[in-house]
Image (cartoon, rainbow, N blue to C red; front, side, top):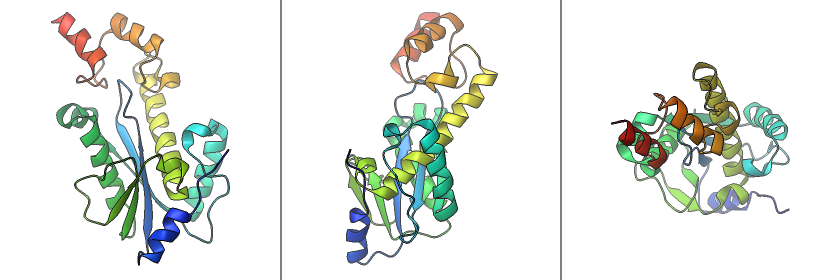
Length: 206
């Protein structure tokens, strides 16, 4: 299995950057909950071993790595709400979360490495979009781990207040049991009304 490395960051250093942040988001596909982004500035001398795309790691391994990331790097996590997702659209909302994560870092980066093929239009610093960046850049991989763990925790907490949708396991994604619960229980305040399965149920109710 190929793992991300520091070559994207090294290239940015070679172009004059001094503080480089990796940025990733999680939660574009779910029917419920916020979209969450993280920005991470790694210390080149203290890069945790085993960083990888969060989807390729077990939950236990992600947690170990998050603790190592928090202990050695600058980390900022931010969100865009369900209301913002419905008002703006999920792509713009995910970019807004990324912009907020970068603004939340203790030091302003002079280069952002963004997972995906688009640079958020609200960024005020130089940035490079990297397709499948969480599999190529350790900084983006670290951000993917931080964002996923944070959002999963949010959804597990919401599951305690809104039981029945299975958010403690599906974290808001459109699993079969989630869609059945949506039909049986109706739409919660945390469901994205602009997403088709939710919109159709609201339309049927009306």
